[in-house]
Image (cartoon, rainbow, N blue to C red; front, side, top):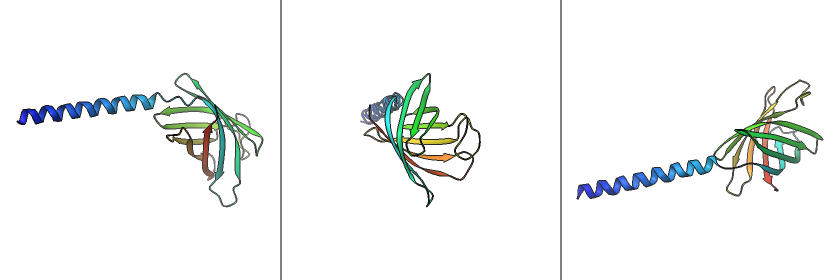
Length: 140
């Protein structure tokens, strides 16, 4: 009787490990490439909401990112890495940053992918206390 229970437990464990391994592999295979609409707002009481578009293109092991903010009429470019349902992006202005400094990247954004493909993120400015939330919704 005990060997039957052990075989059953082993079969359940193997099935669970295999399923978890397959789920982790499938999550790593998520492709974030596409065109997105962007909506965001800083956490500050006086921060204005903003909107725009973002383009994510796979590039080697990561992503090339370009976002246009309609309110500032400014394009931000950068790179990102994805692992499962998480996408991290380092983005900014190559020449002149928003806060009177020169950057190759000035914002770090961490997105979480929702089941419907929407990306909800939190951003942090690298040289100040500014931070906020942002949502990307795939259009293509």
